[in-house]
Length: 156
Image (cartoon, rainbow, N blue to C red):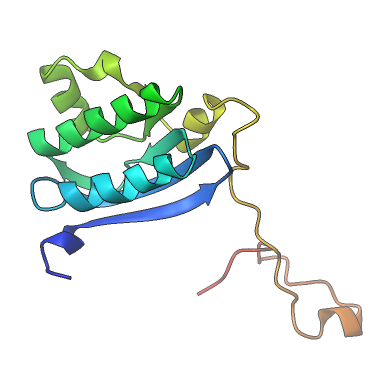
């Protein structure tokens, strides 16, 4: 994979039969548009009609990236679904406003708000439920886990 295609990382955070939550990190531009559309389009083709994009970590989006978002929105709507954009930065919000397409998208401030907009029958659990790791020796000794640890969360 070339350095240019690594400028955008898409991570599937959680999915149900009808909805997928993706985190997009990096740059959405001419160098990454084809992979973005292929990966996101594959999710829609596999039945995820509602796509939630967590854009917290998106650092750049140009007109080509905006066209990708519009194309993905069109694809979801054509199949009676929806593209929901969550946690946009100021620059992306300005781009949507300057190009007068902000009203075309469902734009929400958080991932939780985005998932609340997904119909209940397609909505994944958020935050994802992890199985809490067993603290070694706690069960045998009758000790409870360290009160400073959060079940299911890894410590450094």
